[in-house]
Every structure is written in structure tokens, then in C-alpha cells.
Length: 265
Image 1 (cartoon, one colour):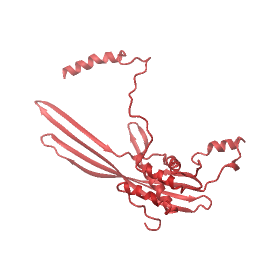
Image 2: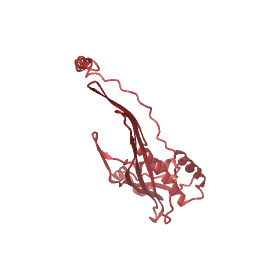
Image 3: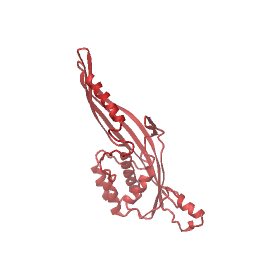
Image 4: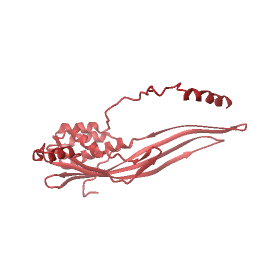
């Protein structure tokens, strides 16, 4: 213990003197994993929909809001558990699914501003044929199993937990405002922790050692998967025959259940 304290006393003045990096130089940044395109198990489903050419006309996305009311608070700040970008995710999916035209209704302010300046005539803006709206309205944290066994201060531990995420999506015909498709889908997010601890007295000294690891399914990536699956279910309600060839891809994803048709819930 005395050697550790001596080492800290020696290192402290070296660090304060700029031994690691001076204030006039940038420190070397760590290189992590490479940038990549976000993909989910349903990406091939989007490609299959595109191959069927079922999304004819002009498509747009309205609000897909976070209606869970759940807020996370920790040392780094306060924010929502669920991503506020579900609408932007869906707009990207329309392009991946081969929509004939995708109209940007996520932020019309640039076009409106140019119209106010007299630079643009809004009569030339194409109208929508279909638009998608919805909400993420369920986020329930579910306690899971836990176990811990300690013998003479030594033993393993295990804990699992889940979160239930649910959303509703609606497909609307813009000319009549008729809702032609509606789905409600949910998914459980799984997390687990495991570890091994040792706490023993050696003479009068307590030695406490803990080794642990954990796995957690990414919430926002799972949300993207849910939106992709939801888009497929909406399209299947509108034109089930043309999109039937893509069902095999859904069947290959473990645990997926058919969404109930409106009126059959």
C-alpha cells in the first residue's frame, strides 16, 4: 500500500507539469470501431418491398411522437429514453422500400421561407398521396430473474431485466384523410448482467474483488426494426397479394408474430 501511495505522489507533479500533454498541443485521440451504415434484421425486408414496386405515388411522414412520458436522469444530463427521431427513421425507410416519390414534410420551413420571400410559388409543390403518422406509446420496465450465491465471501451473481416497447402506426390517404392501414406492435428489449465477486479478510485487511460483464439489446436500433416491420404490416393491409413474396423474410426472424388486423384485436 505504501508503494502505491509513493507512486501516486511521484506521478502527480509530472502530470501537473504537462508530462502527458501540454496545453498548446492536442492529445492523441483513440480510434474506435469504424463508421458504418445502420442495418437491422429487417433491412432485406425493405429491399424486398422495393423489388415489388408496391409503393406507387407520393409518400410522406408526419409526426411519430414519443408519447411514453419516460425521462432518463443521470450524471450526464436529462433526456428521453426513446429516440425523438422516429419520423426521420421512417422517412429513410420509405426511400429504402422503393417509394415512387418521397415528399419531405418533416421540415417544410425552407420552402415556406422562400415562398414568403417571393422566390417560390407553392402551387408547384406536389401534394401527397399517402402519409404515415403514429406514436411510441409504451415503455414499461419489467423486472427479471436474479440470483446470487456467496460462500465465505466468494460467489457468482446473475440478473436479467426487460423493457417492453410498443408503438402504433397509421397509414392515411391524403386526398380523403381515410386511414387505410393501422398496426400496433411491441417488442421486449433484453438485458443481462453477470459477475463473480470475492470478499475475504487476509489477516486484518479486507480484499474485495469483483469481475462482471453484461449484454443489453440496443433500444434505438430495436425501434428502427419495429418501424421497418410496422411499415411492412401497413403495406400488407393495403395490398396483401403483391407483397406476399416478402413474408418469408419476416418468418426467418425469430420470435416475430403477425400483427392483428384492425377489428380482430
